[in-house]
Length: 222
Ligand SMILES: *Cc1c(COP(=O)(O)O)cnc(C)c1O
Image (cartoon, rainbow, N blue to C red; front, side):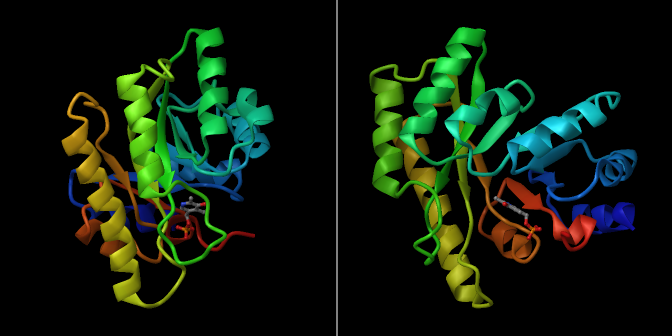
């Protein structure tokens, strides 16, 4: 079942779009099944759950983890040693804490900045002008030298209104392109992580390079 869903989704994705399988709330065995079908990148949203699965699946070669949830600074050590990308950086406070951890560990941490585009006020993330400020500081002042800024992550408004979803995704993409124009020296700033189970075809039309898909692969979360 999982293998079939993965193949079905992969067949709809252009080659430049990376599929991240969102395995939160699903057991390690489900991840094993997806791994057996060739999937290598998985994402979790809770530090404790990630750390547990990392341990349970330590025998799988080439498995990569992304973090996509709200990350509290007192949980960094459960997450940063294990992930190749933190997709959900949503505050300067978190950037500062990641920098401190990475400097102490002599590591570089790759991140996406989460952008607030949805109509829901409760959504996490930065507005355009905050993203510009952060990158100005990163490039101009060499702030956060142990952080690699790899692009943007965004979530569209939770709605059936396709025009709204396209408008939200288009804003993330426009911000991405603007930042790439302003900061050509940020060579790694190229990942546009937009698209989930319900809206990934629209995200791909809007220029997504990375989709984060959970329930369409693993079924409904318990
Ligand atoms: C849970 C989650 C997803 C996956 O959602 P589905 O609707 O199950 O595909 C993607 N991105 C983020 C940030 C999430 O928290």
